[in-house]
Amino acid sequence: MKVFFDTSVLIAASLLQHEHHRPSVAAYLKADKKNACCAAHTLAEVYSGLTRMPGSQRMRGDQALLFLDQIRERLTIITLDEEDYYSAIAFAVAQGIVGGTIYDALLAKCAFKTNATIIYTWDLDHFRLVGPEVARRVRTP
Image (tube, rainbow, N blue to C red; front, side, top):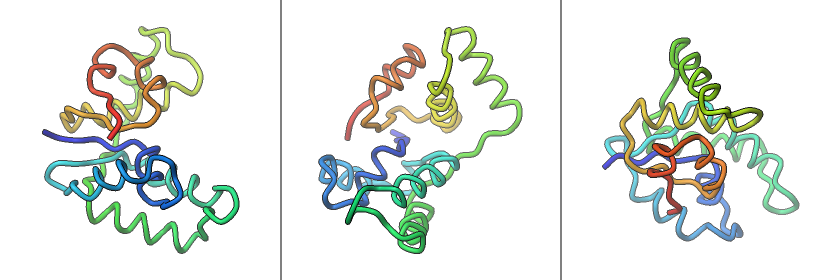
């Protein structure tokens, strides 16, 4: 079984105060490069999210970078090439996907590229909009 981690789970795993911290960190700590991955773009999303959290949850850039280092050590990082991007966008067009849901379609493309059987996310509704094959794979930790 291969697991793909969405940004929402990784952010929750890193923040003790987050409402989804316990299940997220439990799933994250079970992961290794052989059985788990995330998208390269997710590194930027995690950095962005952690450095703009409200109040005491906000991390400095160097603190967020330390967590990104941990992610890179634990998870396989999946990238998309030009053809991957184009085919994901063409798929989105065929599905009637517009707006920001394209980013979830790109993450799903990364998950499919690595044959992930589970996509862990706290944004179930967003990923389910991508299509039935994605909807069958999405779960919360």
